[in-house]
Image (cartoon, rainbow, N blue to C red; front, side):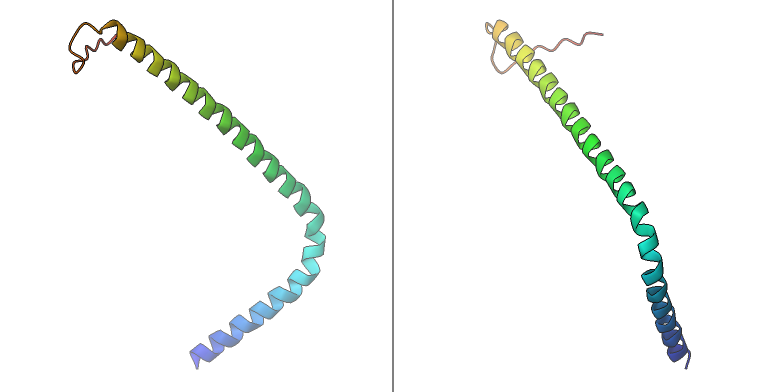
Length: 89
């Protein structure tokens, strides 16, 4: 009996929400477009900023790798399997 009552309550709420949405959605549509545009604009700006940061990271890592290669080539007289590491502060 309780399950039937819950089911009927759920159906009634669903029908009521559908009827209310039919009247409310046209009123909200003009507000939804600017909000959607703002959301897309924010996403595109974030994406572009992320691309810039990734490019900067790749450039920095490339510079560091080039510096390490030069250091390894200048150390060439030693054993190639041994790397001397200096930590500068």
